[in-house]
Length: 233
Image (cartoon, rainbow, N blue to C red; front, side, top):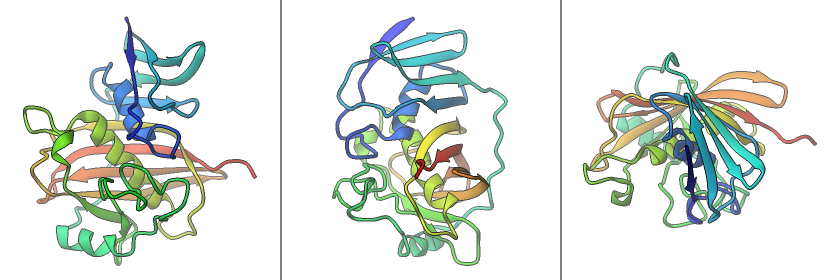
């Protein structure tokens, strides 16, 4: 099966490219259940991209170039830390370390440089090795059923992994290389949620981190594990 998708201009991470989580979520939609998406190159904005999907795998192509590839991972598991309360998440947001003028300052999920971002600003939770933020989805992210579209959930799972990976260190430029996600339950748009991120592993320029979207009462609605890669000097 071959279809075409376009990442809208406003759904950027870096200014000139698609948000990694959002782009991954669009491709994952061609598969059933949990999926692992590997980004092979920056995802262009406003450009028709071909999708080839078959036998639990999908490829995103820009002409002859492989942009991303995905595979179903029905056995994906990720242990999520104990919940963070709405009050603690609001408090953590005050110490958000995002930059208002850096390369990701206009990310539609976590950017401080745009007024219409999702306001996902994860900061360190006092006394715990993770970051957290609240998130009230914009109504435009919901379908007729009032639930947030999966691609937006993937986007919100992406950004906290970066801040979780650098929870106790100086942040540096790092790009999403791979993200694996499982959507456990529908995410209602007409509610406030908690989003958390935490470090998992470091291997040279590579960092792994987890993230989750939780309901206000602590139910895990979605979870993800991401691999980020720092550019070579």
